[in-house]
Image 1: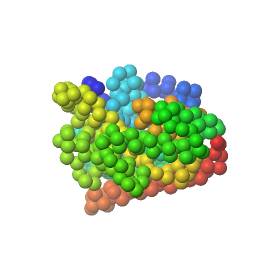
Image 2 (image 1 turned 45 degrees about the vertical axis):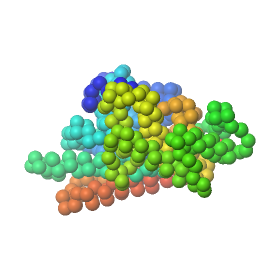
Image 3 (image 1 turned 180 degrees about the vertical axis):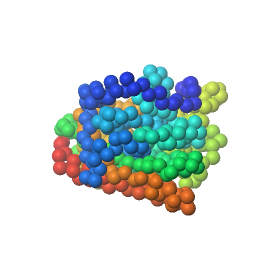
Image 4 (image 1 turned 30 degrees about the horizontal axis):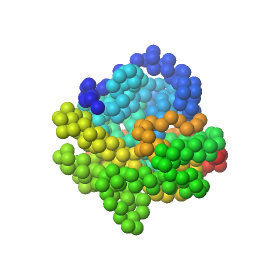
Length: 403
């Protein structure tokens, strides 16, 4: 892997290109990505009320297709959105297109000053709509939310503070919680069986039992292989959750020691992984001198932790829906076949529920009195709202589950 060609990629919106793609996006996304958007707003929120307003849109991040779903929302509003996007995809023609559609980069796990400064400037502009996924990465979970990072709320309140210091009145800046959930529209049993067979053949294990027994057997073999690769001896009586937690902790500790990185004990695993991957990339040439094999091992180890970051035993058993089966199977495919983004498993509806906007102007006095407490409180509130609306979507869509 080569170092990135530049540290920061700003948005460079091309309005004619953007408008044209907004017009044809529903057909492209439906045909190529097998996806259609279904808006399901809070009854107190009318889609039209968001038009022409400065908004920070915070959304859960269950799949790699979430930016496409949000782009379809921008098409409905007929407004340009800005998107805070991971740094990795910006090289080449894809990155060029992302910039013209409003995306700009952030190097996750680092204090990316260029990206932060750019974000603060955007949030001070009138009628700006900025999309941030505050879970910090793709969760691969269709109906549960990972803990939100506080950076989105922090930057939004800081933008208001800067406007106030310039002698202006406190501006209206709304944070809009968005809940995104997917539902397969076809019968997915054949796809689940086919995916299981491919994994079983690759791992050379039997296909006996029902689909859940087979899924657990595949998962057990993958965990065994991961432990063997990490030279970890099995712990008698340990369940899957304990084994996965031990594996992630060991992998992160080893990589950080080898790269001489120090992390806080309370820091989320994702942030530690991003710092490891950024360090590997920044010092690529030096580390190559120590051996490409060792470098590849660390890259794979970091990606593995991200892949299993939010997985836990019982995820499928708690709600054995086609979506949860395929959430887990996609993770296993990524691990066994080394596929970063497996192809869509079937046609899906992306249910997008818009929650009631929170005007940060109303919280500015509390922010001045106690910044940390106010930011944390608002972050928890937004996470809870996204999860509550996700639960509403789950209840509504569960009546139409098709196997």
